[in-house]
Image 1 (cartoon, protein in one colour):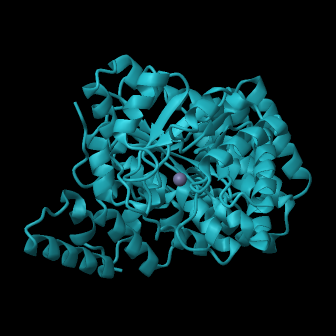
Image 2: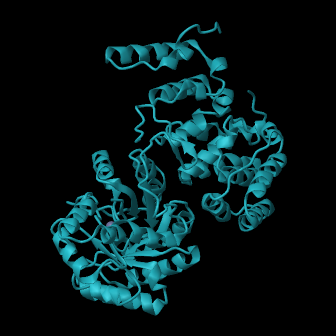
Image 3: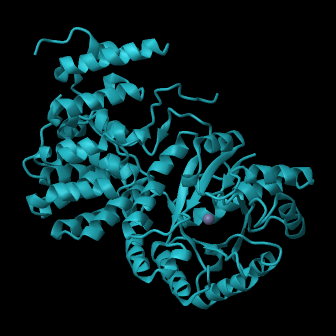
Length: 294
Length: 235
Ligand SMILES: [Zn+2]
């Protein structure tokens, strides 16, 4: 089974995680730029973080045969620091040019403040300018209302719904998202956002169209193997492999390929791990025992 | 192999541009020519960094086709791996070369250092691979030495391997550190250009200590280490 985890914050994870993810069949990841858990005090901190998403983290993933892409944005929480937010917004165009950036995100509401709303609209404009899809985070608190407001804002701004992935859905928000042309993401996260068993029920009820799952693993109590674990739960519940593969491979590829920058062929066989092969035009000649799958 | 830095950057720009436009399709060629033309008329930092960053995805679909004459003429680049260059790297070096022709010499080191600092992996690699070709290359020594501290292997290899710059311009201590890092991360020493001519007694001492440490730990000693341990020529 080919698997894609299209929302995971690898910067916060270890090489053990990468190893386990590769062994479980995860062939590609998307790392959205986000909140690092404590406030950043200057724009330079954002710049270094963005650079590590397109540089160092990409290389770390490649060492385990995992393709790494990212999304770039000012995250919702930090949109409320007006002075800092201006500096970060000014920096974004330079990063949206970069090759491994496949969407604008994650953006959205946190406190549902006016400052957050203004920044969401500015990100829509950037997405239009750079012809990129957007990844939208929905708030933890007052989630249903937050999701309704998010969907209203997308419609009012005239941003194309098929270019929008609304993430962290639950039983109450999924039908709202599916009633639009937006894609629906689900973060399978211990104890809170969504569990494997609940996800199985949602797939049974709503099918696989525009449905995406991810681990949203980060620096909190989270699990980078939630995508393969949910695949196992779906198989056990008798959901067909064709449908599962649509959810964990074809759907995320179809959505993010709208960027024109996701050079993964959805129908290609699972990329073989060959640490000596060409990456980004350069041979990664591994000194220490290159791993080459037959 | 010697790299011959150009007197001015015009000839280099033309050579590189020919390779790009000879391989890309009409749309990509139009994008490239427009960006190059704008850079030649005046330096706009944001436009330059955007064109430099965007080259990869706009040119990824095309491969450079190099004649023997092209390879000969591009010897000035000081690289041994031109056939492995993605087309975007020729374009990026053409952009740099153009900007160096359109800006005061006193700004050049800072411009190149910013490309390195603000670039993703492939942007950094393109700069390093072309470094020996730009006018008065010793001005970029600080950036080149800094790049050796990268933990991204492809970035390190872009300066350490198939690149004449270190052997031509690095001071001995920096050259030795680079060579030992090449050994340490397991890249073949044969990839270091000009190694033979830069061997020195301090480097062979470092290599011997490295071999002793490996043996004491029961680990393998790379078979090519004798390229720097044995038979050091008298200085
Ligand atoms: Zn997230």
